[in-house]
Length: 272
Image (cartoon, rainbow, N blue to C red; front, side, top):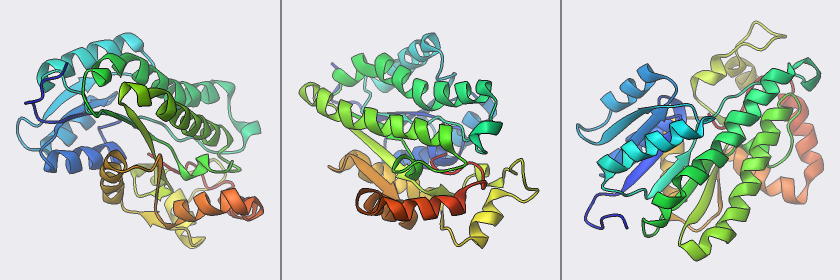
């Protein structure tokens, strides 16, 4: 069992930028030890430089590779005193565009990272989570996991999968004392919004703003991650749009279709 005297610890995939970095900063500010995992070594270093000295460990890894997961978590546990209070499955990519125009290989990559990476992380982290009293799994979903979004079909499908896995495992893992939660962000102010879609020379950020969509500061997602870990809600929508979609997807799905037509073609949206 993890040492009860050790400070609490969180392992964050996709920790080299965006939501992962904001969450690392928020948890470190509360005195937690942070494992920063990412495929981007430079991004890990940049995140670590923003945290207190001695508050983090760095792990260059690809969430699609279970051997890399195993090695990273073993190294993390050596520095965390065997604790894993929170596994934050945040790593993901965003690819948009019409389904008919997306190469099958890109669809495979989206599924393998956005959903397969979450499954891998849970399998590999379970021993540490079970050994840490009150542990939580936190998964990054998306507002596009409430209702399928045109122009984001495969991305949206991966977030539906994350949502379903979260709900099912929160029930299954209760007997092990492990909570399972998700963040469901709308459009977040990260570098993904600077991407230019295939049918436009204008960044998604500009097109979203012109269409009246809210862009949520990334710092708010770090705060939401803290609230999700310490709260009782399975899903935590982040931003006004996500909260609205969570309500109307249940009661007024026809309105979602109208909203989705505005998003169609804007490019990647959601959680990263």
